[in-house]
Image (cartoon, rainbow, N blue to C red; front, top):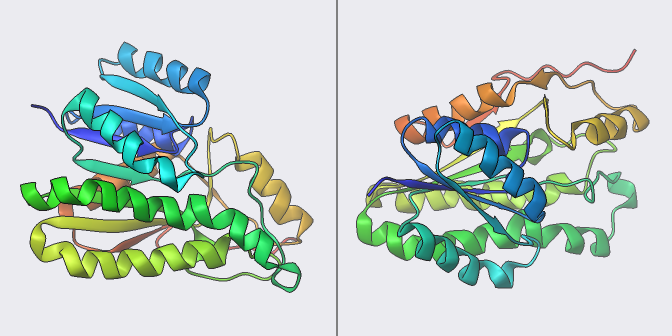
Length: 244
């Protein structure tokens, strides 16, 4: 039975590129995101490239729905070998730290922290029994490097990053790998890149380079295949330019 990758937060940027990269290695693909119409369009694109993909519409800001979602994917494919988790939407934005409040953090926490923890809990029994599994987290640079005026997302992603490091250390000897791709760039073809750039500019923040999602997907594959680092930065030595 061929292996399966579940892409949580599948979109036109990194998500479909990851699906395509793993699909070239013979993986079948579960695509998870809120909008069924966009998922169906991605399924059609991948099918045209000979990649078997199935859409699983779901609201990932609802961690309570994760067990049923994972079970549905498992029922359809018979297994899950790799999870790539990287949802983000225009509904989420940056907040200056001085203006941050509990309500803002509470709104960000389910999607960025609670749901990935629940996804791991849902797949871990299968991975432990098989002695193999990969969890890849795609996150923004502010998870690792705080930036003035661009808070909110960062503190929550930093908590998830902390969890991921501990998770990898605990499970590595069981054949299970957890890794983070920390992206210090905008992502070409991503639906939220333009909105993110506008946020940076309005905050008089740094100018981020633009990354090709196919290059990022190649890094995801390399991390899965080699398992030789917990975290991969892109660019490897980020240089963010202040606005002129």
